[in-house]
Image (cartoon, rainbow, N blue to C red; front, side, top):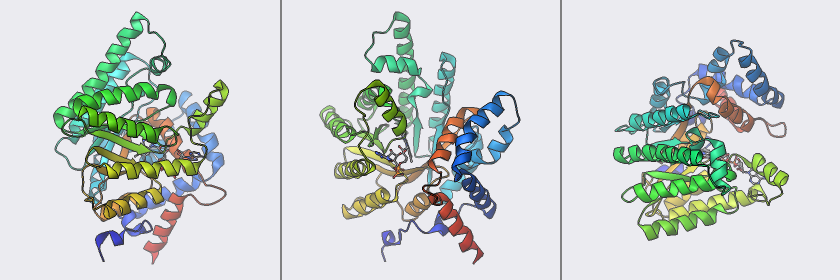
Length: 392
Ligand SMILES: Cc1cc2nc3c(=O)[nH]c(=O)nc-3n(C[C@H](O)[C@H](O)[C@H](O)COP(=O)(O)OP(=O)(O)OC[C@H]3O[C@@H](n4cnc5c(N)ncnc54)[C@H](O)[C@@H]3O)c2cc1C
């Protein structure tokens, strides 16, 4: 049997080898609670309220949902997670997940922290990729103004210069250390500006090696085409296109805004269309693997299987540095560890940061993992299966 024939996303023994019985027990209760839609609905406002009036909820959050989905509050606190993932051949992507800031000092501090994640990755194969979010270092309202094509005031122009310098300093550091840095995709009303920044950074830094990656959200009906257009630009300008491929995280918000403001929704008409474009993009990227380096950021089993099979069919080495599978910490370990077991490149986002600042991220994970139509969520089903297996 060749090694890829051993790939099974049902193998919970490999998926949870790094989890102790106590870890599984904690995860079991966490997902049981998350499965109850009521708690996921009332949880966020209750938590925010409790924090506002100073109730000591930090400890409870840190020992439960935070412990499951985050590496820690600092890079140092993530070391244990980095080691544990590495034992299963899974890399770490340190993701400083601070959200909702809006002053220049905070943006400079976030830039410095992102640079620390790049420094931490140097000469360490357990951290093959790094990442940042543009709204972590640039004011949202400024990005909205730029995206809408409004003229900036002299003060805003100065702010924009400083903002671009932050992006440049992160990418320059990544380039000088030879570390890949991905730029997350966000809402459509700021994404044109993010795309332009990312393309500019790729033109500067991706000549010899793919250092900067932009993110393509395939729930948008125009993104397969824009990836192809960017690939042509990359070919003409002699650089490698770096692409993180995701389905997209802001569907409801996007549809609601489009409806309220009366413009056509940028989102695909249905899930099937998103899936079709996602897989077509995987195919396009593998067809052009020399000129495109990509990361498949997905928890979808069919797409992961499709990519794994396609790499084999096209004779692309599992360890080709131009292709990575990626999932989020605390989710889809059955994909991450089973893919890594048969030698594919895999890395997981390990979010970290002060508890209060990562709460919006945690609430999104809880929402994503609620039960569908009374069924157990996929994560809970896998945990139950592994607990049963260990009893035998
Ligand atoms: C490593 C990693 C990095 C990520 N980075 C980003 C990022 O930078 N930006 C970002 O926006 N998201 C990001 N995400 C989140 C991602 O976009 C998805 O929300 C999430 O992964 C769920 O999609 P899926 O491919 O795992 O699988 P699935 O569970 O199969 O797909 C769910 C997704 O399909 C789409 N969808 C669902 N219903 C419909 C419908 N009716 N019509 C059209 N489309 C539909 C939505 O995008 C939904 O999130 C990232 C995810 C991972 C794993």
